Image (cartoon, rainbow, N blue to C red; front, side, top):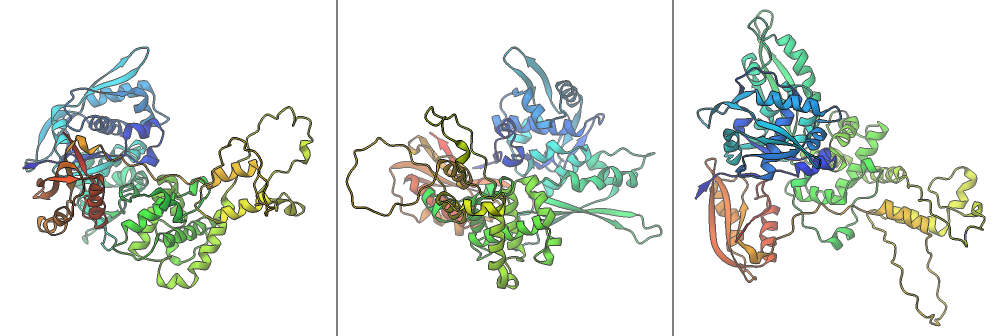
Length: 595
């Protein structure tokens, strides 16, 4: 049975906006290629960058609410749209933007794929009462048809779109996203796509206004190309560089513009790792850092898992190299010459942390090291441990404890001389104070800081018990309440990102795994099918097991009939296929089809 695929959104768009976490959650929404590199505005081109971003938000929200795009109308709170567009957005401007979208028509696709001409972008109105203020909108049927069936697609990142100031940047970003989707990043690959464009292509892609019937490339360079790298700086999937190719004729007229699209590794969110909470704690990889530089310890496990087929480096090596790179960037003191050229080193690394967050920047740093080892190269091994130790000390010094909360004193304590009460401090105020910081609580505090990635939990109070006479024992050192609070804040490690729990299998009739779309049928037959065929099933739920794979751009589904499966069987199949990198990047979790 042949049918088309509906890839899921990556990250909840509405949740990311509601929690002001667009950059952290980094939601992405799929688009058919017809809506990316085959778009032509057929009405007056009056749209702005905010208009284009708003339309992408509305399409994404409709798809998130209903992947079948069966609902004629979708609702979105006005506050969500305004948050997405940024601090400058106002309700009146939003209404004006919606009017421009309603008055604009476009054509999508080509005759070789699917083509729809003179399609209005949207129909919408605002509905307001005492309890809500929402946009009610309807996407035209051609857009719903394209979105519900995507034989070829790419993902758009919503966070960068919300920040772009030029509509020409938005349109070029769509072109580059479509080009990047046609090639998969691999640690041993070139990971570069060159998109070449003549003046005619640039005009067709961007709609840049003509000057006396011709496109003025000087103005295009000034208004578009000179700002493009900055406009796309927060895109995670790739970064770009621009090269002008000139003819050898007199005056060296422009022949074409080459856009070098440099692919990056898929986000750490897309790497599957099974977590055992106890094992996660005992691994001891990672450590507390200043909030803006803190990386969750599961990122190092994901790096090891993602790149295990290309590098023998372990998660502790990645963490050590990261500490070195971070100290190098903060001190502006290169450890190796590569610091001056790499994207995730030096000042560029600090900018990446600001744009993407520490977790994603750290994961991409690891990918860059796997592609071309530098801090993890054999040449650096002789001084790696020493540099890592120094960097670890620098990391600990960056940790600034929060001051303890002021608490009301009890009636018995009010009469005490509080000026004599000692408070543990990590930074002596003078040389004379150094001796007062070596209390038992402070010693434990410093020792626990050195034991990275531990979680301190205060014991719950218990009911008093009658005293029992015992032989005298050495009293174990204890820590005071203030130190306990400091430890709880500094040493608490964030839990791994939650993944959807496996549903109750008694209500499931079919489970579907999606093979990597770059695998041929022969490879799927040789490497994927045996994982499902050759295991001994141990469960009591009769469920049909199915594998999807791409054949000639469409999807074939191959069923293995009903098997008596358990949750452990399903987890084993998924983990085995994931470890061998046989699952699709976009759909690496099985689909559970309800009965």
